[in-house]
Length: 519
Image (tube, rainbow, N blue to C red):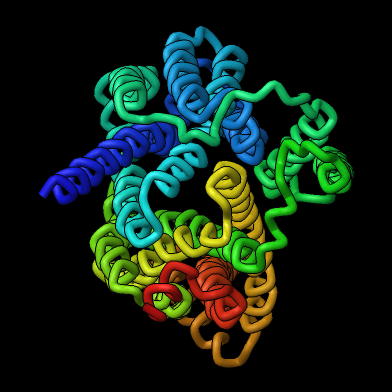
């Protein structure tokens, strides 16, 4: 009886730690998603253009991306609990400063501090969860964590829109204060560093950190501003690309040579970890790329208001949230996580393919099935992928591993958004040129004549009527070209996920599941 009571108490303690960890991670996700909605209001209030105001997002992403890969090293230097508390305090304090920012330059500065503080939140909390729960319970823990991570981006735009519209964009930052205080209390009360995490006095790898910061910052700026500046036709983007390549290649060589690296790239010698990290990049490439182009499709072509587009994008997240506990349960029942990932990739690919069947007559309900299919597939990716990827990693290296995974997700998201938006723009030009050639086709000559006749009957002169008829047809060609370009984007995501699915079998079966099967 004493043993049962002890195990029950330990289990309750583990779930309290999970709640404490998740509260810290959700704070950052909610803030990031909510600020996106407030950007036009920030620009107007601070007398800046929308393009200038985008640096409010870019500055945060750059600072966040720089800190992500070194979070494991920071945890070993400061101690994991201390690092998490520093990050929460720093993020909350920077949020207050953002809320009181008197102008755009100061807001960008405080966003840099906020991004640097928030960079270590997700990898650190994920490492705490994976270390706290035994291997057989990790699936359930990651499912619980995943539900919070999925729900936050669904609610955050609604929260951000409400605060900005009814109060002020400054409240989007002030709302972090009570959440930060609660997270700080929970972390202090329930999280304890394991014995192998101690504050160290090791030499700081200034060269490695400098090369990493330079390379990642240049890469993030290039990806964020590339489409806006027409990519490599811009000297600025070319410069950023060269700096990114030189900085990151030099960093990789330096870290592999260094005895005390700030990022443990040698973890990639574990095949399962290397493949799983690569899958994280591919997954977030497709996920965030499609998340960006879906509302654009709704608003640009179908004329949905922004609120309607936001509401009808939620079925994907709802389906993911509902199916995640199922994925966690199946992992607990010793299902092969590789098979679950394979299944999730194919289902997600099919969901993305369903988007390609939409047309200009689509209504809000036509988006429900594709989004729910894709969302359900993603739930069978998030949980098993997060669990099996770190299976070969030793506990003392878990922080380094989760930092690399978080970094791959960040880069995958940035690349996915940049590449897909650029791809859609290029395909629109391609389809426009191809369809314009049909304007002089004999079949359309009758249509042009009919339109011109209708305009003439309304009192328009023959020459002007002919020109206006051609303009009407050209406008329809442009719309058709835009539709085809978006559908091509969804098809690329579907193909990417489907073609990546066989690679899952390069991963080794979970050691804990293998032992359970043998026993």
